[in-house]
Amino acid sequence: MKRYITILLALFAFTTVFAQHKEQSKNQPIEKQVIELVNDLSAIQKHKLESLQKESKERIDRIKRNRTAVHDSINAVFEKYGDHTKELSPLIERDAALQAELSREYYRIKVRIDEILTRDQAMQLRAKLKEKCEKNESKHKHKK
Image (tube, rainbow, N blue to C red; front, side):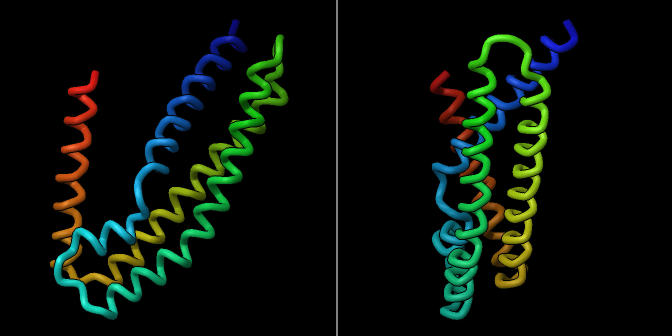
């Protein structure tokens, strides 16, 4: 019984993370959003943001490809009949490790953006991103 509960919880966690991943992948990179949302960027700042996007894109794409492969493997295990906990557990742990790596990469990008922007520009960006998130949340509430 414990195993079934563990598997159901893992399935729930997996589907939640996968749904978040799909939603995030629809959005454009934060570096591009910065260029669009911050009005008074200098040419140097724009160039640095574009360079950051090029640098980070490869790393993020690699992590996402690895996560997709792990998700495919997890789905394959879920399709099998019977208990395959020993096979599934390392895959779930690998997925968690890749998600942590992705979060670290996004944080590294955030720190680099903070180094490029002035404090006022960063505050302007955060306010516009918050506003944008609130609009998206209200759209999702109306669809339900």
